Image 1 (tube, rainbow, N blue to C red):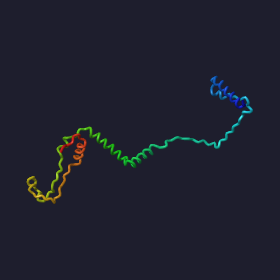
Image 2 (cartoon, helix red, strand yellow):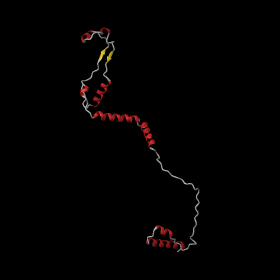
Image 3 (cartoon, rainbow, N blue to C red):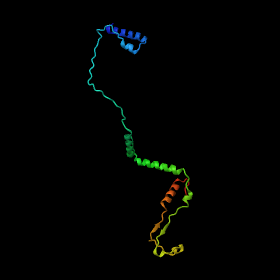
Image 4 (cartoon, rainbow, N blue to C red):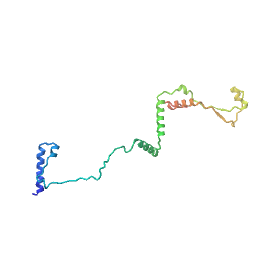
Length: 171
């Protein structure tokens, strides 16, 4: 049996006996085990390349602002959706919820609205106020028609009532 092998077996037996004593780490660290101190002595010299200290700081690799910008760019590039389109869709949903919960105002819709097209007043019709007198005048196809539109407010209210009513008007 070689010398190294005997030292190894001695070390193993010593570790087993010390482990049974339940010693702390500090006690084990302060103890030495060496039968041949002169033969097993080693010196280690440590030389540092530089004395500089490097400080490591962790930060977010991808900040939120860049994420939102990239997300908007990708949505615009691949789907054609912009931030304004998203806002318009939210406004549309808001309008549906706001006007969809209330009952349509049938009293304001009234009967079916008709477009009234009249002829321009011709010089011979001036001063004649009655319907019969107006019918007696001869109208030609060259006269351009006049469209009398309802006010914007009436049109807006009628459009919202029609869009949000649950019953379809039968013609």
